[in-house]
Length: 391
Image (tube, rainbow, N blue to C red; front, side):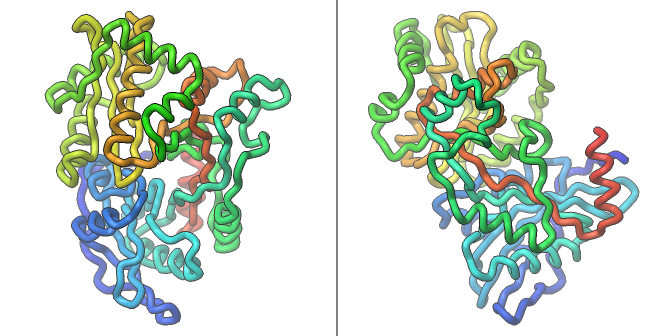
């Protein structure tokens, strides 16, 4: 079984809303304008749930859906549809979404209405990643756990805080027939369950003081060495991509093509000119680091990064991260998100260096409820699940 590729296209409007009279609720297709206006009213939402992201994922068909109660839009989601070959059946995927009030007492009806709507559009199964936190660990807790031979997984370490809503939601989803994807998927397909975030409700000096000594030293070293960080133009994406491809060869991962980043900047800036930025760090006119920065409301992300094999001693990566963090504070963001980590704490694991790099910022490791699947056609879903497990 192989997925076929299709150009990005929007789903035609549903012929009629799926009604739920008991709570006066319906789910229906909404326009990108309605979707974006709803997100603009929210304090926080993932960039993977913006209409522009649907344009970026050109191999998926996309649709914006809205939840209405009493005629008022109370939730929205970006749905990506991936078609199975030779069948008009789709996996409906809502990455890091949808954007709902997950504590609402009508949540079970919300999810049933969504399932009916997506099934009407040919979905054989649904995958979603509710942006609901389960546990948090402070940087010092993670650092101590890494040094403690008793711990090999972050999930086994007592958290600093727990969120009851996360546990409640997990129970609700299981009871409704949803299936949790593996809690240790790491950087496999899908979005990470564990991420590292830096809270920003502080001054730049306070954030800098919260970093470990190595981070502060490296930022200072980069400044003294003359590293200059600037925002790049779309025309400079080719420079970013050349460094990104070098990083991929060195770190043994498959890079995305330049066209992907060109489309990403075009689509996301079309809905908001400051949705995504390119940052470039130079030393003596040599590009030593390059990154992309994304923002939705009060949430900012470090999205993609690249660094030169040469001149690593000038600490361009620390300099460029500090500039992005500083700019996030300047625009009023409350969170700087360094994205995924695995939950390994094993010193011998190749991912441990990335965790240690992020822990040095003084932020916190965050566990979300993860991604969940709901089979709508059990036979097709079982075949799909078997195929994915053998890839």
